[in-house]
Image 1 (cartoon, rainbow, N blue to C red):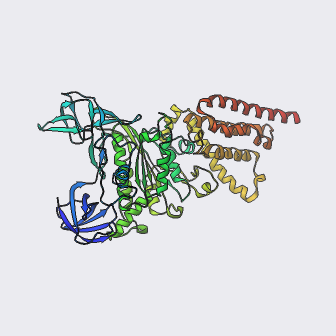
Image 2: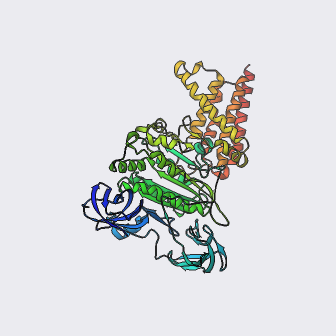
Image 3: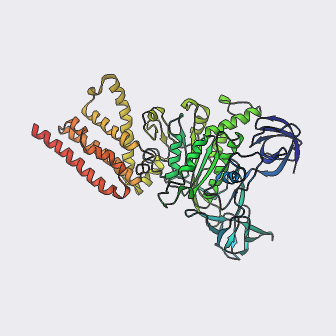
Length: 591
């Protein structure tokens, strides 16, 4: 251990001398209270330290002691259902021990040291193991079975293991390595947060992360193991979009990072998630969720660590073979923490004061997502999908954080303030958004939804783009100047926008739509367009086509329960064709 003394304090930045034995990114204890900090710059024996707690009251000459280890997280049974701060201190434990205000310098183990878990050994004495192999199972919650893996750098033969009740610090397996040394393995392992966990192979993203949100799944899908950005101005629904994805995405485990956002938003998550039922298991969503809370009133330096803490935990579950969805809300607040620390370090500022390494730091974070084959003799396929909210000041996505993010991610869900003000949610603008996974995911949709689905999606997008062009004409010369065919196109697009793309997150049924339901509803709307266009050529009246009662049924199809969608579709489709045939016949009689 190296001990130095404080020579300078600037907010969360502390500079200490006499630290020549310390290393970059070492965790240190600052002052008599032992505040937690991390070395972020070294110059000879001078170390610049970002302190993850309030530095008020510290003075020059106070001691600084390095622990000799980088900032790491504890990984093992007990992560699920927990809520941590940015450096993985369990907030519920701190609340029980110290009250609602976290005192400086307080500590609590990230994983409960007293609780006993039932460990079911998977291997026997004499079995050879290497890093990544599963040595046993622990049923952490009703939903998540934690797979206890051989830690990194261990390879050898098992000399002892036994099923039973153990704490995370108890030995559950002994391995004799090739050099003859015997290692005791516990259910807990530590991993430095700034180092990506290794894997055997990275796979191509060729299957979607189904979210149950029509505008996302149909028009701008994200692949399992993909990366997406949700930029938008204040009040456009970023947080609700992320909540919806956390609730309904086709993921085994959710890691939600509240990074610099308002405390009441994290409170909403804490209040909602235990009450919400997982559509697949019927259990509470908290049974497969880990929460990282570093709200705007918490120390700014810990925001930077919270992103890495969250993605390291997500990688751990990915290595077990799970599909993990990571929500970061928001990377803009994380970037602001980078900017503040960079300014205090007196580094050369980049655009808008952000550090010159902003883009590379963002890339390092998003690059840790992916669909992978884990280490071990029997590698497991897992996926880590990262979805980051971006909060550009004034909604201007030309600012550095948004632009650096867009250069990295493959999916861009552009939230629109005008749509939000018009009460259209999710307020994802269908003209500005994009997904670069569409071509790669098309075979999956054709095989698992319907072979027509990729073409239907392309047709719907084409109609909405043509609608935008027609709206400009309408504003200039009025709707009467359009042909009947263009006017029925506007009616179809109105149905796509208001009935299909609009989705009520607070409606018990409409909050989630299966892929089959999305396909049937879109097919009904496109059938209406095609049949109506043919009917116009046969003399049917436009105003009567637009006013058909069956259009109300098409719009209300999204409120039909999943069990009844087949019957509802047949009934509405039959009524649609019958109504249009009646209108054509009526026009023939009039003639």
